[in-house]
Length: 266
Image 1 (tube, rainbow, N blue to C red):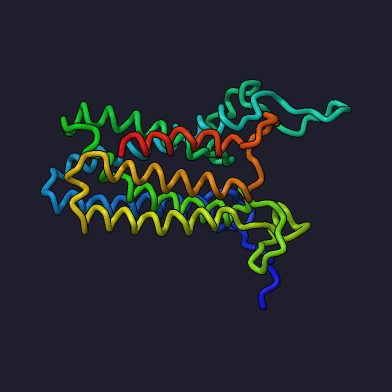
Image 2 (cartoon, rainbow, N blue to C red):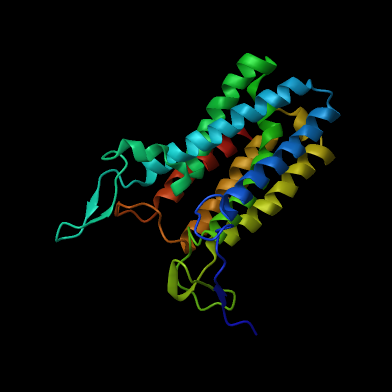
């Protein structure tokens, strides 16, 4: 019987160099897999290939910029954090605006990425496809789900976004960040959830007539993906730097509007 897993994977590909690393490799892999998924969708519907090229640019830029700004403004810290004796322990983004651009140091928030992608796809629909935005939303969600699966695996190799302590047999001891006790592998939970959501969305697109009913697949995506995120947050260490004093953490509060929107759309 497995009594726990000592997770000692090093994200560094080259010793002594923080980049390139396994996190970045998994992040890019997720985008590439998502690209080929939607490429097949476009090919089946005989959509111009130039639309796909434009879509890639819109989504990649929105993902990186939105996720970074989401981390900065949703999770902070906004200002420098000091110990009682005045020792600087963490730099705040508003105190050091240049740090906002240091994406390679980590810090991406999926809620910020989601908001930015929605804005980018609205512009894309107006400028490129000239179609109703529901058309692209129903087709982009499966690629987004599989990209999210790989990104959470990247968090796993980075020893970040970890869970609370557990005595379950599949608990992970994150040797690079929390080596003290076994914890829920919250990143792995999310990755597995997104993996199955990906195949659910593919099934709805290829095996049903739901893609002919604008917004149906997108509505399901909002409910199941953000619903999974909401549930996993119960076993995850809160990412916010400031205690809001609420029963739900920031990740859950940000997920609720997406879930509600999914039900409204359906």
